[in-house]
Image: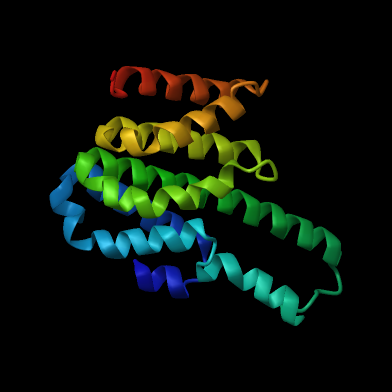
Length: 195
């Protein structure tokens, strides 16, 4: 997995790898992932930081003036717009699959996932910033809620920070986002310590 993320240029390949890791974790539980947790976590950190080769190659090519030669018959601006849209779609799918893997690992490992959450949780925080699209915020909040639901001992450490995130986004008029925020409040009410 780590080698593919470091070297593969095709975002669809990364998406499939993440889906396979999620399926293995869901079907086999801890036995399917426990020996590979360090590698999986490092790979997820790379993807959340947008440092995977498939996420950085376009930026490097544009900054170096390197890229595919323009076809005389095509409008270069139209090609760039289509390419940017495809990249955004794939980036959203990669984020969705990355958060799905985190949820699956938390479901499989329970409170044993907490050390990995300590590494991955802060990597999700930038996706909650104002400049990120609504879909990123929805996925990040939903992921954190599900992880905390499945690793309830983590709530003591993350309660205040997560509550601030929820309060900040609770006034958003978007239905999908407010649904995830309401669900997250419900998780906190259900499993947070009552002391």
